Length: 197
Image (cartoon, rainbow, N blue to C red):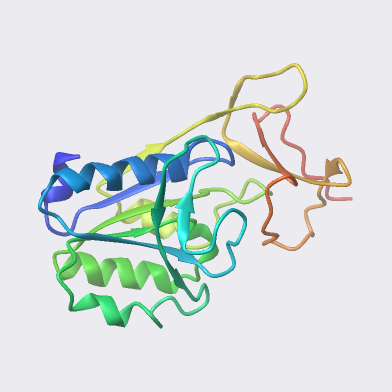
């Protein structure tokens, strides 16, 4: 956490579904409560799974207030906070934002603001997701969290997200973004399936 005191610091927390990304982000922000750093958290408008206006982790009882940003144009709504006395900007579910988030984070770094980001690094196909590759390349620190494979009887280290439709693996040509929770499992590479035919 001491690196967060460095102006322009960027930390990216990533991994598959159920790996504890949001929980880790909440913990990092809660730690700042014992410092003189001011922070603010944001989430995309399309992520309405658990709570609107809060970061919520399925594995923790902790939650934190969050402002809602337009996922396609995240700058709209952010401009109100840029000149305020905020040291650390946090973005949850960054994979749902447009690539505009990369430029926003870079601008914040240049301004000396620290940034914490969490999100899926890979989509359900197993391919880099949204702005995450660019943010990972810019990061001062990457925290890559695994989950346990949900495939029956496995439990191995999982680094993929499996989308299920009617209990079966989603086809490669399924829509890229389908916000949900029960439709997804964490899977190891061996049990991650993406049919193409």
